[in-house]
Structure formats: C-alpha cells, structure tokens
Image (cartoon, helix red, strand yellow):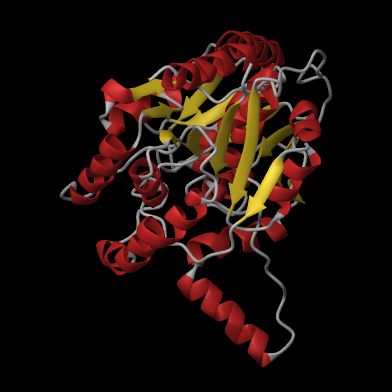
Length: 392
C-alpha cells in the first residue's frame, strides 16, 4: 500500500502545548501507512525532541510575521497592518518556493491557524490542506481581523480541526470544522493524591499573564500552612541589581513589563512556593502533585488540565469561557472566579481539607481522560480526515 505523505508545519518556538499535542498525534500514526515530515522555523529544543523520536525534521530559518487574532495574544490593528508585506512575501515567495520542492506530499497539515500565508500558498499549488485551530479566535472591536482570518481559512483549507467546541463556535466555520480534542498519554500506574501531610499544587504556565501567573502568585498569601504551590514553565529571570546599570534595567522591566515581572519578584520572596522552572518532562511532577491549577485570565483550552486528569489529579481552573468544557464543576475539579487569587486559594484550601473529595474528583478526571482524551479515539478521528481527503 502506498504511504500517505504528510508535511506538518509548526509555527512557534520552544516547548509548548501546540508542538507537544502535534508530537502526540504523529507518534500514534502508523509509519507503515504514513510518511511524516515536520517543518520548523526555529532549530530549538522542540525540534530536537522530534528528532529524538526519529521524525524527519527540517528547519526553514526565515523571518515570518504570522496573522492571528486570538484571545490570549491580540495584536494591534496597526501591527497587523505593518505585517502585510511580510505575509505577502511568505504567501507568494517563501512558502511556494519551499512547497514546490516538496511536491510529493499529499497533505499539508498546519499546526495553527496563524499559518494562513502557508494555507494560501499550499492551496494555490493544489495541495490538500488541514489546519489546526488551537486557540480561541477573538472578535475584536469591529470584527474586521476575524473576518479576514475566516476568509483565508474558509477558502484555503480543506478541513479545520478545532480542539474544543468553544473554539469551533468562535471561529464560525462549522461546515468544514471538526472538533477533535488534543489527547494525552494515559499511564497504567500513577500516584494517588492527598497521601502526604504536605499538599502540593502545581502551576505549569510560566510567566504567561494569560495563564494566570499573577493570580497564582497572589494566592500564596491566602493558603493554609500545609500547602505550597510549585511553579513550572518558562519564568522571567529577576536578579538583585549589583550596579546602577542593572538597577536601570530592572526599572525598565517593571515599567514596560510590570504584569510579567512583578509576580516573579513576589514569587522569589514567598516561603510557600517552589520554583521548578522550564521542565522538559513535566509528567513526574504532575504525578507527584495533589492538585493542578490553571488560573487562566482569558479564554483558552488547558492542556495541563487534561494531563492532570490522566494522572488522577483534580483540577482547579478559572471560570473563563470554555473552561467548563474541560472541568465539570464538583465532578472532576473546581472552578473559581477569574483574576481572583483569594477564591483560588479558597478552592485549594477546600480540597486540602477534604482529601477524600479531592481523590474522588481525581478519579472522575481519570475516567474523563480515558473516555474523551484517549489517544486511540482522537487519532482515529484525525486519520478519518486524512483518508477522506485522499479519496477526493
């Protein structure tokens, strides 16, 4: 049987939810049926992880400005306007030049809807195009940028994969969009939470404002004495100044990036916090924690919540729109008012004081992971899309 050749295009840099989700997908595909190649735009640690898993990786080191309009990172209209020349260069020169050298591929699978310039180029060259919609699309003030993005996705993709029903609703292209959840690996064995006097809550969002670093840090002062929060992810560095130049540098950081650096300063002084930093393998820490917290400040699907469910851990998340698609209140976790650190702390304290309930929520989360986020179910759905496109 002839192999289906798929070129995956990844847009970002560093370790994050999108490349990890894509890695989980391609690892589940039968390589006797599929030939897989992954294109990165930066030669970073994530590209190396793909190589370690024996995937064909290629690096295209060119400057690109992506057109996206998401709740977690809305660029100004002016910034989008200035990015048009770069978008046109990618759509008409860079992407076509690369794709013409890879004509043998049947399907181009874009790992984000920000890659509209690549979708445009691929369809012009008659490739079959699949695009992942991983982030909630923002409407904006007038809806112009959303309309432009919808136009490109509607006319230059064959199928769109949204990772949640909330994402699909926001995008508004239901006729060509299928909801397929990101999936997680389900360990055969995992530790039961709340088995030690010291309760550990785990936060995996790094310094990201939209993932709730400020809320998590500010909740520390309201926690019971037997609780600590572990902070993981890419955290901004903050060093005590030793010279006038360093003082000026710190002052600039606080002035321009106050919401990102102020929590780090507070965190460095907290006694009930543990800084883990960037984790290449977060799963041992998920397995060792009692609670996972995901205090998002804007709408976004939480991959760490799914991973915590896989390890039988309860999840506490903010009540941003769409979070209740993951966390079922009082069944597998708790929802709290977003941007409210005291409410977050109250939820953590409540589970710490009610360990039997916490364990029950974790068991229910594991059950949901098995039924909804399993690799087999969701890989099969993606394969159905590939096979249907090959029949056209």
